[in-house]
Image 1 (cartoon, rainbow, N blue to C red):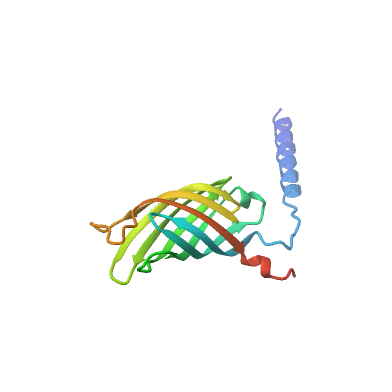
Image 2: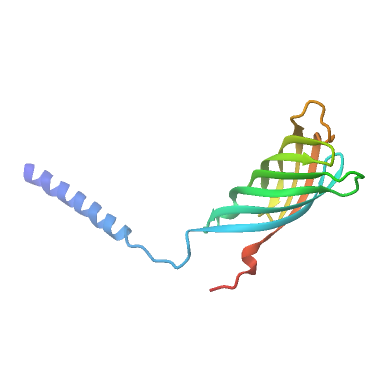
Length: 171
C-alpha cells in the first residue's frame, strides 16, 4: 500500500513537472514589451475666455492591444488666450489617461498675464478616441482669494494629438 501511494505521488509530481517544463517553452519575439510614445497636441479650450492649447504628452504602454483600453501619462503644455486685450498664458503640468473611451485628467496650472498671476488646478472627464481626439469638460479651480485673472469655472476642451512615432521609419 505504501509503495502504491509513493508510486502515485511520483506520477502526479512527474506529470506536473512535465507540464511545467512544456509550458515554459517560450517563443522569442523581436517586438518590445513596452514602448514610449510622445504625442504633440493642439486644441481649443473654453473657460470664460477662448484659449489655444499646445502640448506634449508622454505615455509608457504595453504593446499588447490593451493599450487602446487603458493607459495614462504625463502632459505638459500651455494655453494661450485668443481674443483678449491683455494676453494670458497658462502653462500646465498634468496627468491624464483613458479607460475604454472615457478620458480623465488632472493638471496644475499657473495663469500669467502682464499684471497678475494665479495658480490653480483642473480635473476633467470626457471622451477619447485613443488619444487622437479628446473632448473633455472639467472645472478650473483657482487657489487665489480673488481670482485676479477670472479663470475659475467650467472648462471645455477639444484636443487633437499626433503620435511622433508615426514619423519614424520602420526598421
